[in-house]
Amino acid sequence: MCQGVRDITNLCWKLVSVLRDQASDSILDTYESERSEHVRTLTGRVKEIGAAICIRNPEKAQLRDAALIQEGRGSPLIVTRQEIVPPLQSGLIATQYGPAAGTLFPQPNVATEFGTFHLDELTGSGWRIFIDGRLAAISMNTEKLGMPCFILGGGGMIEAEGVVAAWFDRYSCVAAIVRPDHYVYCSLSKVADIEGVCSEIRHRLRATTPGIPIS
Picture 1 (spheres, one colour):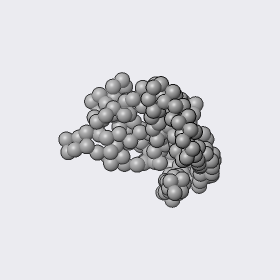
Picture 2 (cartoon, rainbow, N blue to C red):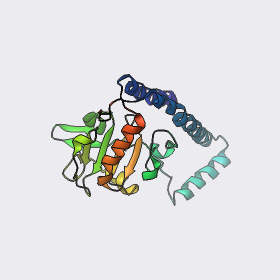
Picture 3 (spheres, rainbow, N blue to C red):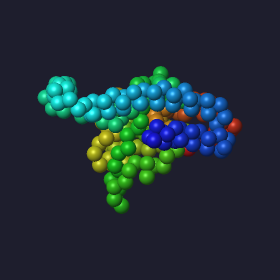
Picture 4 (cartoon, rainbow, N blue to C red):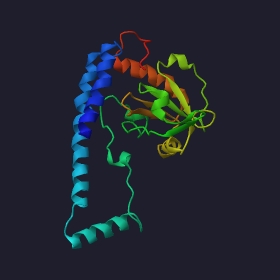
């Protein structure tokens, strides 16, 4: 069921982009290349996890537990959802900019004067640029980017738990361009590269108007 939801999510934003003349219908060809390998890999991982959980032989279960504790260096190993779900390996991503391309962007809680909200509740779910406000300063005309830009940390949005800050540190980047389905198109080590990559995205989408917003 979860795989089906991911299939639908992948198709929906691409269909919307085509219907709004923001992309050529060739973007729909990326559906199979992105989803086929992803489904096979994740299904295999889930089956392995299920087989481990459902061990009924007490001796084999003890061996499993001992192996998990050893792997966790003395305590049970904690694996997050992002680590179980594999990244996209191909399609509409740009792996040449860094290893974060194709991964799911985190969904942190953001503190505001009106309360705490999920990031997507504040930014929407279109194409988005996120910049690490702890390290980076914007010195560009954001109107040329064609998609909204958000600063996290520093003088920007305030994270409640520092989830995205840890993500930026993990991938050694200062910015990420995120697709409408929350997968990372690319991560960047220089803010100055953002404008050029946004132009590249418009070219890949083959929008009918070169300057058309893609949010």
